[in-house]
Image (cartoon, rainbow, N blue to C red; front, top):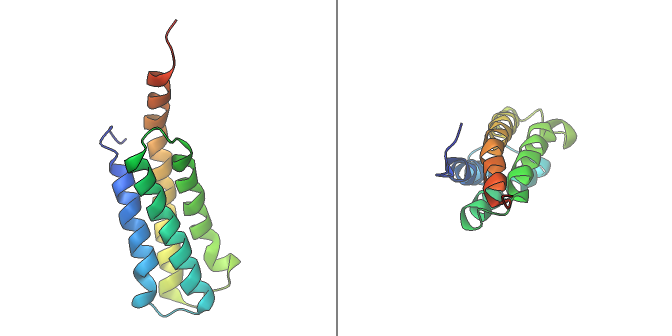
Length: 118
């Protein structure tokens, strides 16, 4: 889906920054605020790490895990009553997880290119 331009990493940075900053304009409680900030920063960080160190494969997986955690966070952290915060977590969580999964073929291609040929 993505090419070697690493567009998914840039998208992760944008999604993470949006999520981390969203408590500025959304109605939240402490659980929602800190969950959005922390997971948003972690998602953005995985994108930045992948941009800087393309060979660091674990960041692709971490991005997917953080996306799933963000998706389940409204239930786990009990902030479903805050619609804006919940929808932000659900939508950004799904998009982040999809982006991470879409990046996996590119990651597999990098692995094959790095493997020694016999």
